[in-house]
Image (cartoon, rainbow, N blue to C red; front, side):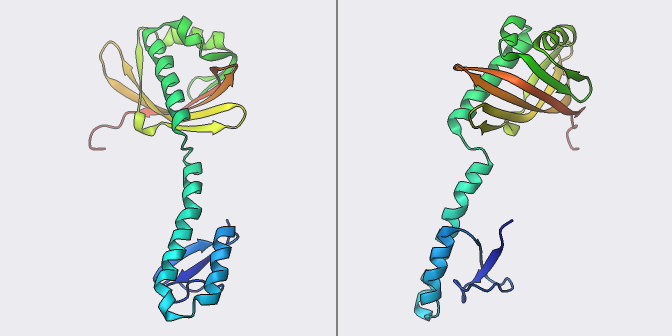
Length: 208
């Protein structure tokens, strides 16, 4: 973590750190902030300039941190919409037991890691297990508010989130789990190369 200098209202632009009072924190080692500090060191001692100086500090802070926050959140609306659409198609096929359509979204050598069921190493086994344990028995529902999509440069994307599973015979949704999927884009087509399904647990009851 980069060191930080606390800049108070009365000492905005000071290089030496001080104890927090009423001010803002700006990280060291950032070109934008260093330029502001140079100017602040020249004019920061004049009382008439201090209020405007604090606004400049705040503006520099917002400019410097907003891109970092966007990068950390993986904010790419086009990619998010594309992968979310793929998720909807994959699990529509899953819920209808359309294994031909379902299989088209997996690499032949897909690795599937399941915290309760273990590991499988190919698409054929994923389809066999889906046919045996899922078809006509269970329906998957995405918890949309948990969905996160992140790009992988030169490869594809990471999809992560949570989903719940409901018994078709009763309609009861009793299980919930986390998931992580690695998508690869090959010649314009997306396929999953890794899937991790973990954190399986009972659905929390209302009031829990």
